[in-house]
Image (tube, rainbow, N blue to C red; front, side, top):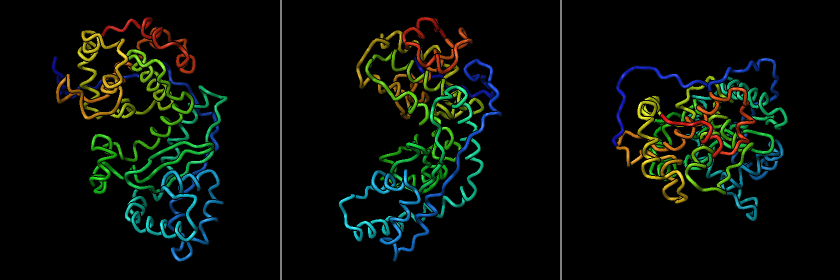
Length: 335
């Protein structure tokens, strides 16, 4: 079976989990954006050793994490060694910083998007401790991107400079972030990545049951919840596809599912095989060049949406607690 490319201009409707979108306008979100990259690059290189403590003091929950986990500073280094290392990094990343100012001199639009997502998070999970800070930073182009901490969401602006940013074509960067990943290195994915990190914070990934069926439903539930937090976002962006790839998956949905059924893949626990279908990749070999990767997550999302449509009274937080196999059985998914 080959993957059919849909060349038409038809628009598919992939509703927000088939549920009515709740009104969250009354929910107040207290969160502020802190521009760590401005503070870091404002340090006089001749005074790095002196001003470093002040930087960490001003960003108590993020400063040390940035130095050690993101930049790789060894805490055993002398202050002079650390200062020299950071000055070298400043020189190396100055182009990234300057480029980020063209995109993000005003971060308010992205703060607004994140706040809207947090309103939905609070609506569904009122006991979840929301972050109080958005911290932007500039890290290595082949390093960590967006993250979540004890009281903050961190945004690596170096990972949002546009898919055609020249540095993303560097071999060192490509080894970490292939083109099919850096294609999403745009501002559009800031709020999406933040909400993905919150989904994983609420529900840490659990691979105890490695069977493909369980894994695709798990991925589907996470996409379902992400869609609940960002109900106005384009679904293709949530799964990391292009619009064309999403349209083609919708068109070829029966063939995608038949791949799993006809090959008796659903009960397999072969990790190398499972990775082919629930991890990012440029394509799915068995379906041809036009088929994107991660088609197991796509199928799982469709199954969960089918279940949600049959049981609209079940809220997203309750749905997430339902056993994956029960969701599959009750959805009666047959595209």
